[in-house]
Image (cartoon, each protein chain N blue to C red):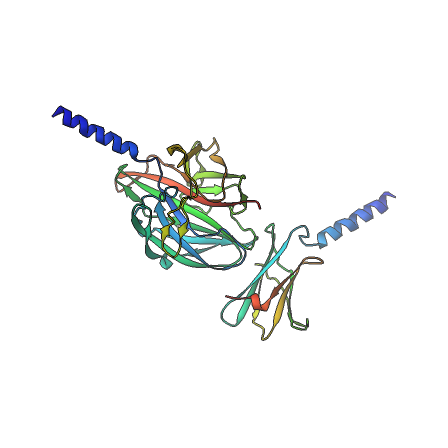
Length: 271
Length: 106
């Protein structure tokens, strides 16, 4: 009997060891963040593990999805997009999960797309995860108010223009909770290593890079005493930043809920 | 002599004030609103306002068919001209942006 327990224990340990250290990332995906011309753009909301194109979680109906458009010195204008969302099924390399999509007609300037998702119950961790997510799309090169907080409960506010990064530049941002910087916030970073295929609602099988060891799948940095973080961008493509558990005492339905803030940026090669 | 210098300084200053955002790239995009009108959005690459900047619509022969200024939101909306036309966003010498009517779509 003791032997059996021992064997079972061994199995459990080895199984848990084989689960790679990857993180949940709320994606707002669109192919380009710096568009030459206005027009219709596709947006996909997927809660997944982007580096590995791994397990995709079922998203509930988002609490909020909107865009704040600003151009030049004009006052930013908020447009609700929640009713435009259509349910889709997103296929990862290991499963498929409920996700959302919409289409948006963009004109000039900055468009800050903001998602407040329904908290996701993570059975593996026994807590909820709520990742308020931003992505900023610019049309035509005329800047707007990309540097201003939108006012999400948890938010990463960029200090570097998020759509003008060359590969090798740094990206800086401030992690905020209720409009105040979060000193020492922990930030996880993942590279979108598998191209999202818009027509198939799936990740491409081919990976762009291979991690030499699990630590590289999910990079970790901390914000400084002012809530500011800095990241050197080593490769062109989309990079996701998730500041985790910004309000440790927060609960949802009497359970712990990790309040996270996510931002996606895209770097391009100089050539 | 100091008076002359002051005068030259004043003139230079006035000239500077009169030139709108000249160090920055002018930008103008136009869209077909789908209701028989077009809207042009003007601006500069540094995000400064284009309010008051001159805008013209010229026909195929270069004749001005419509003239106006960017409003306080740096926008200009007008009826979509018939035939071939070009929109000119004129932010001063060397700062002209031309948008061809054929490129103005929804």
